[in-house]
Length: 251
Image 1 (cartoon, rainbow, N blue to C red):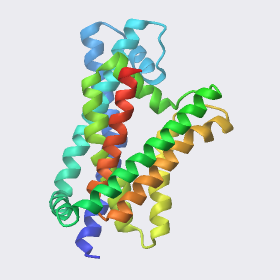
Image 2 (image 1 turned 90 degrees about the horizontal axis):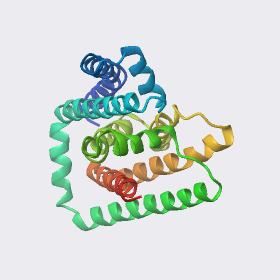
Image 3 (image 1 turned 180 degrees about the vertical axis):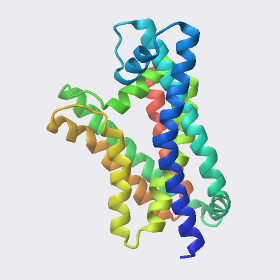
Image 4 (image 1 turned 120 degrees about the vertical axis):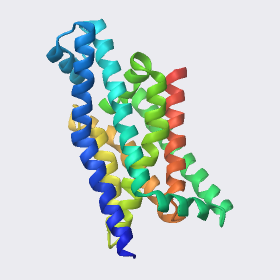
């Protein structure tokens, strides 16, 4: 593998981590500060509700949810721009590959999406049957759509996040890992665990809520590995998020 590609993958991961961990915090505090100044709400109280999602003061909750929604949008927009700049030539080259094998690309993408939908439907059915809730991550997205800003959430979750996460979790990881099995393990783990770190539940319920994220991580890794094209996993990821978004809107 060209060392230039390795450096590009390393730069992708570093940029993502710095922007996600540091940039997310900075953006959150800036937005909270602006809303605090303009609305008259206490800054610390706003930050606390942004973290807890408490509805004790519903007007404050709405301000906090909008702040989280806007912060999530800005964070993903910045990461999107940064990673597109870093991987611009790769994205162009990968797009051109689609025209070489359009049918196989479409088959892999469609099969991956159907598999993701199947496991989502099955797990949601089981969760409803046994009265199991949703992860904190999923609950946050629902609140962003219903009480924050549906448009900003759509852009961040359905359009920006799939490209950002696939460049990091699939393209960069598979490029840097010397063994394919290791690439699968790391790709699945770093996709699934961050979605569940904020979820507080019993061990049994936590593991049950982890299952769809593990399966999604596996399917997206499999789609990328079989297609060897980042747009295949981006397409599956985007369609899956779009379906989830629509189900929240109509549900």
